[in-house]
Amino acid sequence: MPTFLDKSLSVIDCVNEALAALDVDDFHKIQKVACLIKRKAKSRGDSELGDNATRLEMAARSSDRSRIAAIIQRVYKIIKHHSVNSDRFATKRFLIVDDDPITNEFLAAFLSPLGQCDFAEDGREAVTAVRLAIADNKPYDAICLDIMMPKMDGHLALAAVREVEARYGITGTDGAKIIMVTALRDPEHCIQSFREGCESYVTKPVEQAAIIGKLKELGVFCNDSAVQGAG
Image 1 (cartoon, rainbow, N blue to C red):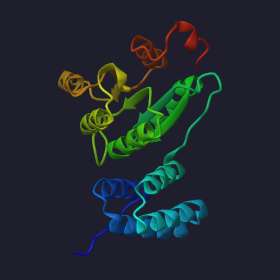
Image 2: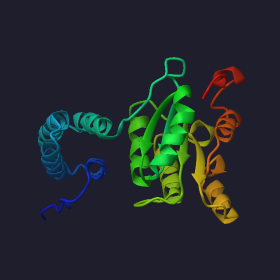
Image 3: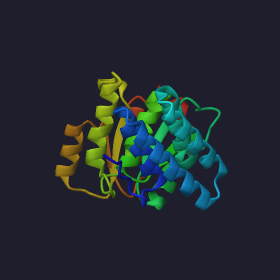
């Protein structure tokens, strides 16, 4: 049966398709995904992305699972790994998940002095980011997760992130500390989020003291000196 692939998929959606195909050893579909990424890379003049898409296609032809996984991670980093590094807090890694660029900007301003910030615009991107980070042995210390987002909302993303962690043997307090960040003030959403596995909950507009305080409470930073001078 021929493999159907929606040509309107974004590159990040292509990454998700490739990961799903790798799970079931569908190397033919991965080749199609690689070809689609190449076309998108050519249209945007991105030679680095195009070169890696070519490598992905070749790895799929040879059914080299480990090489495919490594290249998929590389492709993801090319398109979504916008980070700000800090020499003092290089070991701390944060994932900010929100489709609102203003919220992303505020949270990055608060957190970038304390570590590395990666970004996702919806729940599906967040799950992919978490999966790739764990596979790269660089899991996130904390995730700021919005609830109302396109494609996959925060509730579904939260459950999916915990499923990914469990698949890798990460359970309980060993997982990323997830803080739900949302404009919703309905207590039912708060209760639902805690049931699904989040550690804390803040409402917009987010204040620096609130988010830093939550991270300290959750043990992301071992002592007060770690956050002195932040912001």
